[in-house]
Each structure stands twice: as structure tokens, then as C-alpha cells.
Amino acid sequence: MPDTASTRSNVSFLTLNSDGKSHPRENALAVFTLVAGLITFAVGWVVSLHALASILGIVSLLVGLYAQMISATRAERMIIVTGLVAAFVGTALGFAHGGFWS
Image (cartoon, rainbow, N blue to C red; front, side, top):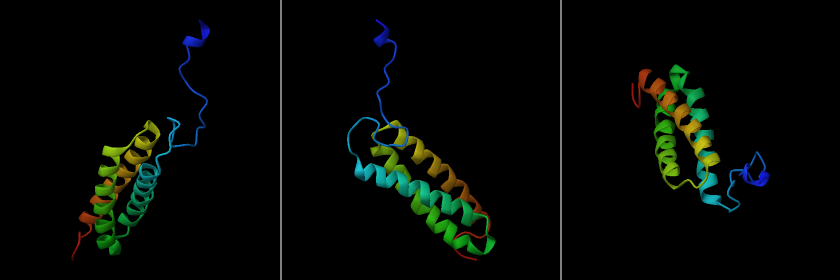
């Protein structure tokens, strides 16, 4: 029974479709959340771009929360949560530097 000890399949490390099925919408939302979250995080440190950080952060958080609800695999969820954390920090910095107006 040595084959029962391992439940891992031969799936590539760099795929979001670890269940073997295609999830194009979920993958696109996960990647959008990560990219937008990282941009929000970077822009949040620039005081003069506080409005951009606030708006992009809110959009990224809303898309990321929806993506988290419909995500199908663990890999997608890891990408989404990383993007959500970055978006939250960037949005908080944007709000601290003046928010939408000011």
C-alpha cells in the first residue's frame, strides 16, 4: 500500500487549475486582484496619488472578495488573498494620505 500514502497528483507548480479543470473567469479575477492589489500597494506610498490608491484599492477589494467567493482551487485562493492584503494596505495608506478628496 505505498501508493495510498501520497494523494498528490502530477500537477505543475505554476498552474491555478490544480484540479485539472479549466477556470478562465476565476483565474482572470485572481490575477486581476493580485496585479491591482500590488499596484495599489505601490501607489499608496505616494502621498500625491492618494485618490488613485483609494479608488483602485476599493475596486481591487471588491473584485477580490467576489473572486474569493467563486474561487475553485487553493492556488487561486492564495493569489487572491495576497492581492487582497496588498490592496488593503494600499487603500489604507491612500485613505491616510487624504482619501478620495483633499
